[in-house]
Image (tube, rainbow over all chains, first blue to last red; front, side, top):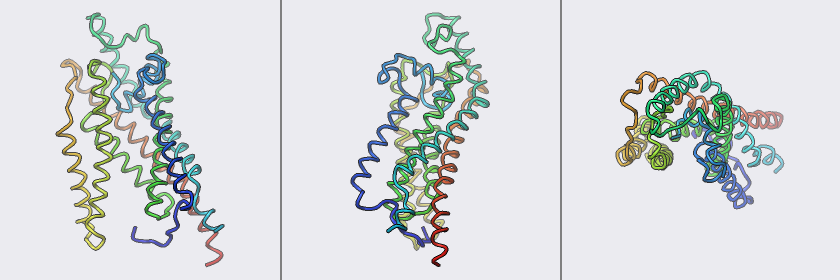
Length: 67
Length: 256
């Protein structure tokens, strides 16, 4: 923060709106993935409790409420 | 213009680095969890099964006729941590691009490391203190929806707390001494965290006869898994972002 030797924008301003939508879509997909791994009990995956059972140990050790 | 395009990586490039860092960090976290956590999960499941056999009407899992065998669940641990890690790494990369674009400061891996540290604090440590991880046999299945909801709310509030801390740090002004800025950051962080801890409900669902040492060991292993995950994501992401800085330095060197 104190040394501002290089202050080039990370992404060109022209693509800002498109970038924002791409980023939002990415966040949505990644949150869905995290949900399926960590929380789904069959409501979204339509696989019954299979995902819950498969991810069981991971859910416990990642610290999310499992059952 | 050509210089700018070579020095500012595209969003997809940063995203792939985040996903990759998360995947590898997830495998590392899975390895840690397998070594440090699985013995405690097994011990807790043995307690759960003993309780289920003693009282067949009680709820909980029936691991005997499970959809996935215990070996399958141990393998699923690595699947879970690597996929979860990839998702978190991707989210970190997205946050990196959006936040650093606003700051207009381009500094290789430092922001990535700071963001990973902020995420570790806000997404893991703050929620863990209020809602610590529970092994099998702990937790009432009847309250799982409520506990999941409040846990997610706590994660969101953890991020708000970190944001309040950074807001406090910046609000004091650049002329203020470091201890004052740090104090304002701690104050903002503690304010949000304290209110969240007081307002959100607590759940005491540890059975009276559950071994205290097993609970402690499991929770420590669980926290360690997340610490390995986020430390790995931060370090690997910073290492991948650092390549651009070295490339830019190589380009800039001849002209200066």
